[in-house]
Image (cartoon, rainbow, N blue to C red; front, side, top):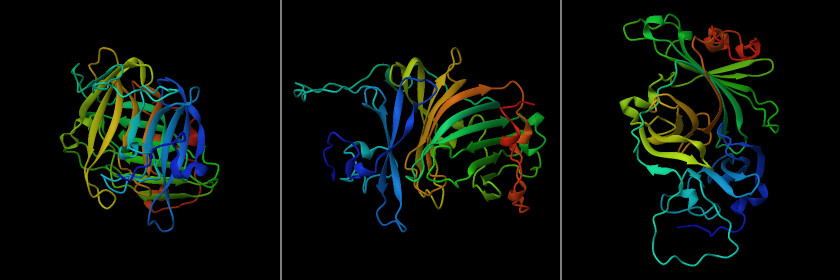
Length: 364
């Protein structure tokens, strides 16, 4: 299989290049503080040489593993990379709800027993429904890239989707995702990155300017750059669109490592082929925690990841872990969704972005 048995260090052949990006909780559930370790995974044949990132999260107190994410898959589905951790490298994402340190290897079990851990149930025995986003909300996250050159990016998301009857301008349906390079001191000139997506006009309504599109915006100290994105904003019920085959694959309830005192639904979403970056379909995985009495339709995001995300493919961001979350009764200030002049072929000179004009989330 091409594997090497793991030693006491799980960092493989890149042990001397492993680095700890910092310590924090994994998400808003605050189950335990973890150390975020990044290990480079050189990509064979890349020119110039490029490394993906293998991320490992270890409990800050016990130093036992909590989670793994591999940014570069094995050479073949049936053959691993001897320089990376055996077995686990065959999976994009792994959690360790139970991990026990032993002084001596255990004796072979007399018979096979089905592995299990507290609170996990395959399928959807409680008949939770798929979530639907609130029409107006804001949240924060850590966005973790598979590009070894970067550490996680503190991120703020604002989302607005007005119903058909209230739709008038492109800012009535828009999403602003703002990513800071706060924890990337080795890239002092890295910009503040903004992904601005707008939703399509309602059916039967002529498309308004700047609707149904997307922009990748880079805010430097004295200038702006803007590139088109190939996809628009998704509607609140995006996970229920038939083409994505959204399915609750499992439910985890009150697990002290993963979701203490609450439940999460583990949802798979099919990401269709998208040329040139993804010629084959891949899976997105997202965890949501249902609010009491909602049956799952009203849920809070926990984590989101894209399997087989690649370095320099799209944003190279494979993982989002969510923290602050707030829903609004009224719409968000539309200035948060303004399309900069640079995205319309106009001046690229410095202008004050909306995120510097507002000290907090604002509603209109």
